[in-house]
Image (cartoon, rainbow, N blue to C red; front, side, top):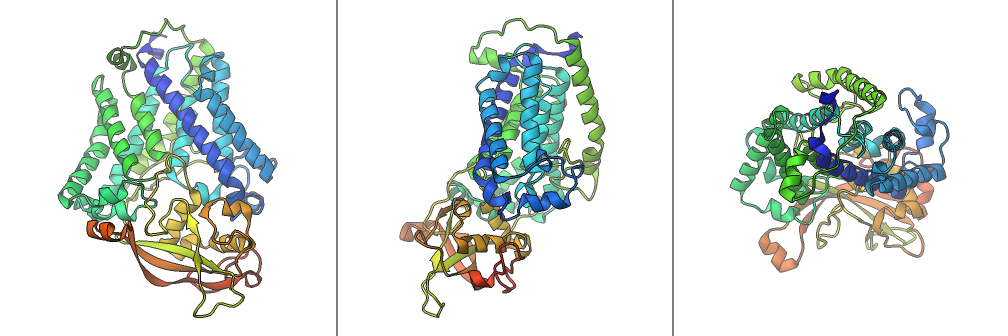
Length: 492
């Protein structure tokens, strides 16, 4: 079938697949480095407990067959190795069926981790990576031209990502309609980056222009993805530019980078290759019949599953970042339907004194990405994802968000657990664990230009209240008992 494939998108597919494999690599490295501390056998929310109460049908995962810290880490490093090989071009050097199998294994391994990841893997970019990775299985390799149907499915995915995010804003916080949300967002977002301070200090009229441009990029431009070339390429290019703007302004894991790759997949690769002076690819063979049948079946599946996300888009009760099936196929997306006006941070402190007094010196634990030391400039970590740092942001919003894991976190710190300490930037007790820990809530704000010049501090913070009173290990009752942040009932 001549209509089935289009060699015009050979370069687009090449960039898309290599980039997606690189993001898979990062995601698996994150799982390898953080999985044991977060969801391991003695993790903050142990996966074995989750698996004991969750049937396979509700959360498909290889870990229903077996779970151990070693097996979790092994699966993560296996995924990382395979992703690195695909990013280096291995899938283009093997038969078509073998390339598809590589992509399928990547998807299955990461799905298995996400489906036991619980609160740590409850973000929209997990579903986005899985949905994009599933479509990549059917995109073929260098031995055949890209299938047109899968290219259209990628555009449909990109449309839902952008249009869904635009709708959730217009329907949500009134500051989006008033064009004022960026008066606050750069300062109160989950994990600011090195340029966030400067973005926040832009003139307010420019912030209003930013919001208006965002509405245009998310509510108008996505419609052009379904138009003929070169208009669709221009729309894809606009998405790429706006996503890079977001990359510069904060840390949002690989959300923006997957969206960038989806935008590039809409670009006419043949025209782009001519602009870049690249040679034309060799003639590509006609796809085998079995491949056409598989692609048609996958397309039919996505079309059927699209009913629920499409209905969600037009619903007055639009859901944000929601998966309608446990395989995370054809999801709904969105971000920042509401914007915080103030930033609250939970600061964890410890002491090695036998009994805390009014004169006790408390030493602060520093996290890798979340604000702590007011003189420390925010760092760029994305697309690498610091899961604990992100959840600490939610804890600052409400203790309810931290109820499942904050008590175990405090217990692990009192125990000096090495896996947990590796999640942090520094531990003020290198020799032996502290005798007591406490947590306090602070109001953080970016300093002004004058304050920055005078003090060298990027943040100013004000004590708000006690988040967790001083607790010792013998008062926690074990690492797995519900904690008491905000309630004063103990740590573990």
